[in-house]
Length: 343
Ligand code: NAD
Ligand code: UDP
Image (cartoon, rainbow, N blue to C red):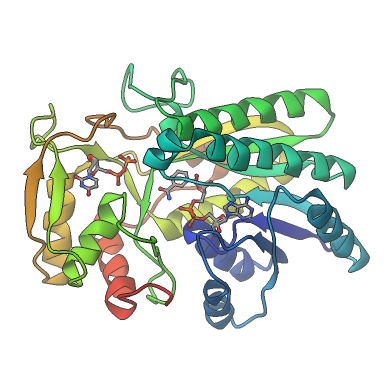
């Protein structure tokens, strides 16, 4: 039987790269996005890259009627939704501290509305965008999936809560499947430079800040902290290429189709890179200078964190293949060709 995949938040940074991978793998994706942090232009670019039309609907996952109509339409088209890939949500840690209710409403309430609509439509599979931030202060590194969960901010709490809700949802109904993907730090862009990360306003994250400095939109990078117990005193993260992360979702849907129940997988490379190492690699790959200054540590930041990705390697048959050099080259190709993002 032909089936469809519903992608919530499919116009976003990770969602758009994943949409492309699903199209390339022959799936029938349907996107729902409220364009709160993206625009339909992203989907037009994905269509061009894929050489195929994209089915998409503007709307909010908290709109139960809209979700019912999407599931119903897919059924009437002869390709009912088999699995939901759930990206839609808010993701800025700082904003989540300032506006916690917005985060709980969008990320937690939104996921409940979605699950209820899935129940009504008898859709039993979901792949959820979780985050390494659910682990909090590391007890040991690399994080394995059994590391205790202790999120340190409302954003991380929403991810841990949705994971718990999904565990209870799976427990309550036969054949239900939830694959929770705990992403480490996705950076870079599709190698074509056609789609990429387009943060609104001042970037919160390191990599888009670096590319905006390199393209001349920002004067210099502020490096938060130089006295961490790391290789050079700056914070260490597990950066992975967004296209590798996108492929992980195709693998997760294949896994969900074969294996019922709740499961969590780390998606990372297993390697840590410091802020200075990333800056220097970016400079070497692109030939662009990135001026920087050192500031105090950013409150709430961890010194270092990286993944043990062996469960995803073994059970999903997924492995990150692209290097930090690839991430820098592709991220720069996107930023230099699109200095103002999708505008
Ligand atoms: P993004 O903001 O680029 O994409 C999210 C998309 O969801 C946007 O297109 C936005 O318009 C849409 N959206 C938000 N709320 C919605 C709602 N209520 N209804 C419909 N659409 C809605 O973010 P991203 O970086 O692509 O992240 C995708 C997911 O992955 C998020 O859930 C995020 O928390 C998670 N995640 C991201 C990272 C990262 O570093 N980017 C790391 C770990 C986890
Ligand atoms: N960072 C930095 N300057 C910035 C943004 C981030 O020095 O403008 C550092 C931050 O302190 C951390 C690393 O870069 O050590 C990655 O930060 P990011 O916000 O990208 O990811 P997260 O901290 O959420 O893992």
